[in-house]
Length: 118
Image (cartoon, rainbow, N blue to C red):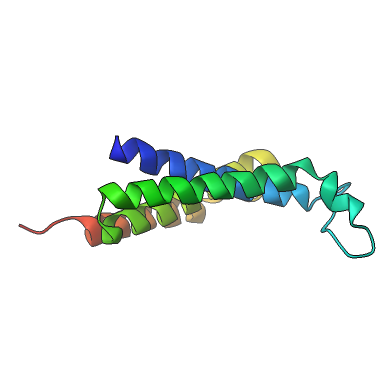
């Protein structure tokens, strides 16, 4: 159950980032004082903000069940990897071999950080 909570936290965090990016792309725009209504009508912004809140709650629940030095690196690196994939799928951002290599290196690094040496 603790790993499912952490996995849900990773995906909540990653999809929140995608929604916030979507909220800042035309025809939507960054909210300003001159146009406060743009913030009210920007549903991806509110959905992303809500998912960040859910991600925080899931991360807190994961910390109740896992050590910080395991939960934090996994959540952070998992979100980075998922965002790299989602940004390529949703926004057609570049996804080169170096991106894949970087994700693999991050996963390996997190593995070595979190593995318990016996």
